[in-house]
Length: 178
Image (tube, rainbow, N blue to C red; front, side):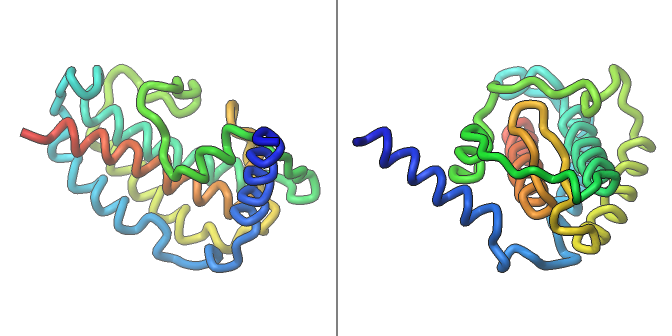
């Protein structure tokens, strides 16, 4: 009985999260987060091994690469090929609105290079700003496939980007705490 109730709860939450018309908005998508990222570029070489084994620049680069690569995949996708499927990991992530630390490894496509140049961070930031302002002009059923969390349509991918970006901003804030 408890298993059935838990499964039903996940299913209801998935449906609500996948088709929430109130989330359909705006050109302000991640605007504050990108401003915060820009402010942290000055602290790019900061490191706190108790928090993360990589410096602030790694988290900035990874966050920006993730935003830009997901946008590219969503834009390139064919909405007619979208097949929404329930993924319990994705559902749980969207329900708790948080990525647990140290649980996943970054896919190669969004793993920063060994040497991260400041100019590259600013270039990726400019591209992210451009990409995010165009996000809502993409079809609702445009999608990308996350290697662990499955297929996400445009709005779900936006929610994922919010959660993912905040995850890395929290790590950066913790690195910079005195």
